[in-house]
Structure formats: C-alpha cells, structure tokens
Image (cartoon, rainbow over all chains, first blue to last red; front, side, top):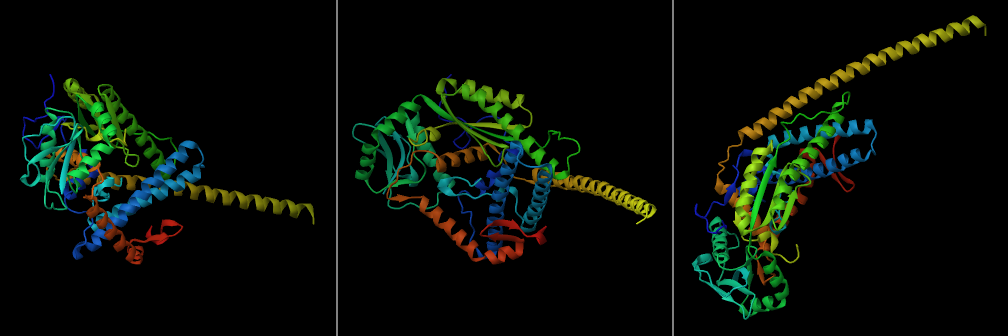
Length: 123
Length: 219
Length: 130
C-alpha cells in the first residue's frame, strides 16, 4: 500500500504513529508558542524578563558545555577524585541557583533556548 | 517579486492557489522547473495559515511529480532571476531530484526520560561525584536508547539524518527518506518501538516532502 | 637533656597527635554525614521541582501541535535555499542583534542582579551568589 501524500484526516494533522504526550516537546514548546511571533521581546514591561531570559539562556548553554567537558574528562580519567567531587558540587550548586533564578523570573526550561531563525535553535 | 515553493521535474502546475490566494505557475525551459507565485509585497512574518498554504502547494505537486521543497520565505526579484538560478544549479537540482524520486520524508521525535531509571553509582562517592557520575550514566543511557530507536528505522529508509542533541541528551529527532511503498512498514515499526522501549515518548509525523534531503550542501 | 624528659616529651607529643587525629576523624565523619544529608535534601528538592515542571505544564497537545512543530522545523530549517534579492532571514537577524545590543548595554545590571561575573577571562559565578 503506497502512501498518498494527501492527508485524509484534514490538512493540519500529520501524525502517523505514536501518541504525543507532555514530555515530547521538551525545549521546543517555545518554538510553537513563539515561532511566529518574535522571541526577543523589546516591550518595556517584558524587558527585564527578556534580559533575564537571554542571560540565563547563555548561562545554561555554558553550563551544558562545561558539563559535557567535565564528563569527557572524567571518562578520560584526567581528574582526581577530589577534583571530580569539587566539580560535582559546583555543578550542583549552579543547577540549584539556576532553578532559583528561573523561578524568580517566571521562566521555564523551555524558555531557555534561543530561536536563531534560519540557523535553527541554539540548543 | 516571485515567491518560490519548490523545484520540480515536471512542468505541470498544481491546482491549489498559493499565498495570498495568488495563482501558482511553473517557470523553466527544459527542466528542472520552479513553482512560484507573483506578489507585490509579502508580510515579513508568516502566519500559521501561510505555512500550511505553502505546504499544501508543495504536497499537491508531490502527488504527481518529484519535488524539492524550498525553505519557507524564498523570494526572487523576477522570472529572469529565477531562470538563472535554475540554469546555474541545474546539476545540483537534477541530482537531488533523483535522490528523492519515489520517496517521502518521515519525521520521528522522541523524548527519552532517564529520570525514572535508577542509576547506580559507586558507593562511598561524595555528593558532587555522585551527581556527575549519575549525569554521565544518564547520558549514556539516553544515547543507547536513541540508538535503539534510530537503527531499526534507518534500516527501513533510503537515507536518514538523526540528531541527538549533544547538550540535551534526552532529545532525539530523526528524518528518514522512505520509499513510498515502505511507509506502512515504517509506521508499523515505530508503533512497535513505542511499546518495546521503556521511558521514551516516540511520535512519527509525515509524509512530508523531502525537506531534509533536498539541499545540495547537506548531503 | 636527660633521658626521662625527652621520653615524656615524646609521649606528650604522641598523645597530642592522637587526640588531634581523633578530633579530625570525628570532624571528617560529621562533615560526611552533613554532606550526605545535604545531598539527600537537595535531591528531594530537585525531584519535586521536576515533578512540578512535568505535571504542571498544561499545554494542549494534540496531533496538530506535533504536526505544526515538525512543519516549522522543516519549513524554516530545511528545504532548498536560494539566495534571492529579498530573503525572510533579514528580519530575524535584526531582532537578534537588538537583543544582543540590549544585553550588552545592561551587563553591569545583570552582573549585579544575578551575581554573575561576565569577565573577559570567562564567565563565572561570584562566590556571594552561591
């Protein structure tokens, strides 16, 4: 049976298999909400939140990069147990601090991503 | 200005109208051809409606010919400019057309949850080490799960492009170029995988025009 | 120096060393217990937060949303690209620059408010922030 491209279900549903549930979108929910409106909100009222969003996004990007680096070095065995422990504690604290800041600014995980338009998403 | 929808191997125009209700025409001398509509101006920000309109035009064409869909928002000044592009990049377009002939694109998305899995770390590790070692173990688990999803599906496809996000290991996205007569088998396999793999939400969308396999640079 | 006083001094030193080690041992042990308790408490907080994020998010998820998301992915990031005279990309890039300019102008405010040091040597968290 060949697949006809014309969708019998109506033109806006392209689901073929599986059930979309809460977890599925992860960080890309923001793309749905804001894809067709702009991410960087220059509106006065939202300026603070917009700035926090930008900065936290960058911090989150750095955190992920640093974590990846740390894990690589752990796998490579180039860190002493003490260094691993200290690194781990720092990451834990950073995550906690990030959670507090996100909560303070009313930001969710999905908000910490940048839509770079033609370049796709930052993370 | 001309708004371009797709490059195609057939000079037949679709029945659907395009953006702003404009009629869609075919441009090109001997192939490949381009599908376009003429506009005085277009809003810089597309609405959801516009996206689906563009998609409907391309899918309509796909019923009867092989298409290379354009990225949304592609415009050229005039017909001469468009013909020049078709001429300059003829080889690239013809190669791409052959690459995707008879196939459609299917998209697979998965969110892999490792939070529920108990991950053991060495006893006696301090909390910092435990945190990092746990992250490493979860990352490995996510990668393994992504492979368990991707490999059986890649086998059913002509080509595939899978992306695990290096920074967020639980997110998996794959694009698969699947022969039309294998779409059903692919769909079945995805359904099976949703049952087989614990801790992952998997969905498949499609059929799509081959957006991920049309560009000359990316192959 | 007579033999007895040397001996006694040695014994005193040994006793003092032992007492110091025992103290340190006890300290180490209680520090470890404290860390383990902190860790457990931290985990509980983090899991509760994840729970909230997953359960509390109320977005209407229908076939249409997944479809739209995949459509956007393809239309905006995929497909053939022709560099025509006018492209849609201009608007996006301009807005990104606006955002970056606004951010750069307010770096000092950000550093102060968020306790982050954005120095040329690399960003870091100020001690006070932790």
